[in-house]
Length: 401
Image (cartoon, rainbow, N blue to C red):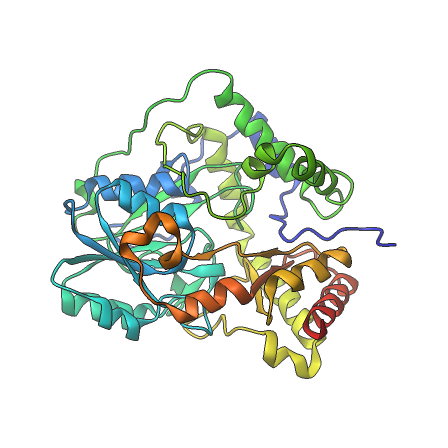
C-alpha cells in the first residue's frame, strides 16, 4: 500500500513566505526583479491572462490582424485573442522542446500577420534567436508567454525581454507562487507609452475568499501534506462535486470559456513581497529542480532516450514542469497514479483541433502527438533520492504497460 502521494508540483514556499501575507514590507515588482534590462517596465496584473489582455489592448493591433502562436498551448490564451477580434494562426511545435517551430512559423506568415506569441512551454526556452530574426524580417511584434519560465535563460539572460512584451504568472502551480497575481513586462522601444493596466474591481466576499482558497491549496500541495489533505479532497470533489473540482484544478477543454477581466481578485501588496523572497532563491531552486529531473533520468537507464525531451536545446530550462513522452499518456498517467505518483496528461492541447477554434483549424501533427503523449511528472527541489527512484519506477511501468 502506498503511504505517501507525491504531488506533481510544489512551489516550495516557506513559512517566511507566508508571513509576508500578514506583514508585507513595501516591496515592488521592480525590487523583486532587480537587474532589468534598460527601458524595461514591469506592471502588476491580477493574473498572467490579464497581462496578455492589457498588452493587446494597448498594442498597435486592429480587429482581423493575425497572431501566430504554437498550436500546443493553453486554450484560454487563444480565446483571449479571439475575444479581442484577432485571428489566431496556429503554428506547429518542435517535438524536442514543445515550443513554436521557427521553420513552420515562416510557412504560416501572411500579409495580415502582425504578432508572434511565443510560449516557453514547461519552462523550456524557445528558439528566440531564429524567431527574432524572422520577426524582424517580417516587421512582426513579439510577445512572450513566460508563465512557466522564471529562471529560464536564453543567451544567458532571463527570457521575456526579446520583444515588445511578455507575461508572467504567479499562481499556485507556478515556480513563483504568490497565491495569484501576474506581471506584464514591456521592453520594446515604445514601452513608456503603455499606461498602467486597469481592470474592473472585483467586490464582495469572493475577492477575499479567493486568496484564502489559494493559501489553503498551496499549503495542501506541499509534499509533506499533499497525500493527507489536497489529494483526498480533490478526489472527493471529482467523485461528488465535479464543478468545484474543475474550478480548483482545471482539466480538459471548456468550449464555453470566456475571459472575464473582472473575474479575479486584484494584485495585492503582499504578492510583490512573496515574489521578492522567492526570486532571491530562484537560482538555487532551479538548480535543485534540474538535479531532481536528472536524478529521475539517470534511473531510467536505456529507456531515458525514449521518454526524455530536450529542454535545454535553446538555452537553460528552469525545470519548472517536467514532461516525458509516452506512447499513451492517459494510460501512463493511470499507472503512475496507482504508484502514488502525481501526474497530469492532456494538460495542454492541440488548440488547432478544438471545436471553438474550428474556423481557424489547421494541421499541426507534432502538436497533436504532444497532446496524446506528453505526461507531466513531479519535479521540485525537495524531491528526495527515494522519491526520484519511485517516479522512475512508475515511469518504467507506464512505458512497459
